[in-house]
Image: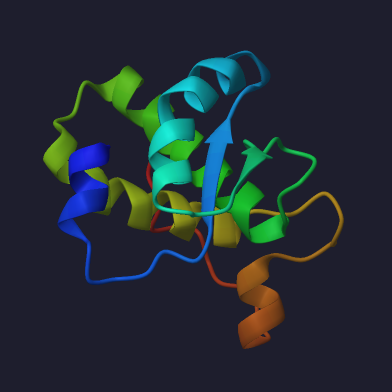
Length: 121
């Protein structure tokens, strides 16, 4: 950490945030306190996000990631197919009904119901 800070000696750091869990704060504080004090950089501790602090887009992205991981565990595909899995998952989720709205995302955006005969299970 010291080396990275000293390598950036031309840039002025205005504020430093440390994202940590409750138990990690003391160990991080001891490691960074002297360096930040020498450089006169103010710092603050922030908590790592939990699901109650994030918005709908972040929850949707977490849902996509979890679905893709499930697909990989079931099918044993290689990681290089991650982008195809993401496209497939988002495509399927756009054509499925939501619990809050009686129509699909595709139907709300385009205006008609798409046929799902091309999907094979």
